[in-house]
Image (cartoon, rainbow, N blue to C red; front, side, top):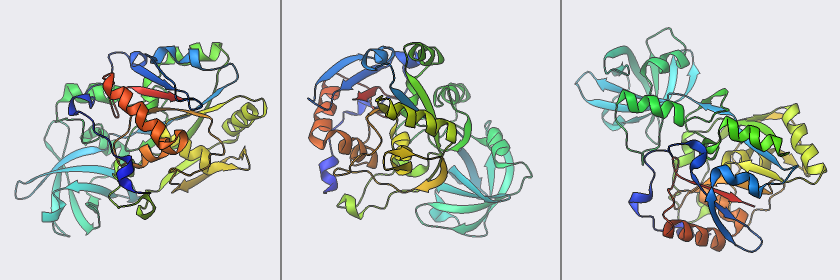
Length: 349
């Protein structure tokens, strides 16, 4: 399939720079796959489109304060994204400006106020702007990031080092049910849920189950290959436990719908599914869902509006049919929906 088929035009002003004032009062576009019908509503009305016995599957990963700033000894400024800790004190990071940095060079990591916090040595340069840093501090990575880190918002959301804005982002670029720390990007479809809305849906007979997928930096990586088949998708770790696998399996057995909240939950469910039955597991996935894929577990999904030529748009296009999803996006643009991570949502059923 040609990557160009996933392209569409989005006016820049529709890229949301801030979340809705209240989480569940963002807009919601409901797409019915069977006939392609569209309904414009608000997210806190999502229960009107769910049935008693349906199961919402949410990704409970928690976002690290993974974005940080540094400087070279020459005074040159650097911006980094923490990816993971490979060994004690050894971080894999993405570093803007890495081209000028040499292996063996020491840099200073800045705290959130802009002061020098600790030194780090560049011990290896890798591909795609990645490198390994040896951090000269005894704190665990999570504690260090609490001192130096900012919310890892995607680059199309414009941010600097404003501490008040960072405090707001720390709260809003995190789901209300986040608990398993390790993601460097939020599962953004879940940002629209409030604790009150979850409880309301439970009282209406909607089941909830949780999986964990540590969202990686590859989530926002555009497809640059001419065809989707040439693109190598990122790998991400996931887990699902016995209790939540049981909730999902019982829902299917009783005829309820499995509705994944976010493309990350979709990937977990479809990776873990085997002959229509989920099993508890911890593993990694490179599953690339694109048009032509046959879904085994997911009956519906809650999702945000995705970037052109992205693996996420390919996934929702596989679920609805590419023409159907692009028609829905055209409607959303005409109706001035807000797009991407801090934008509005879709319910596809």
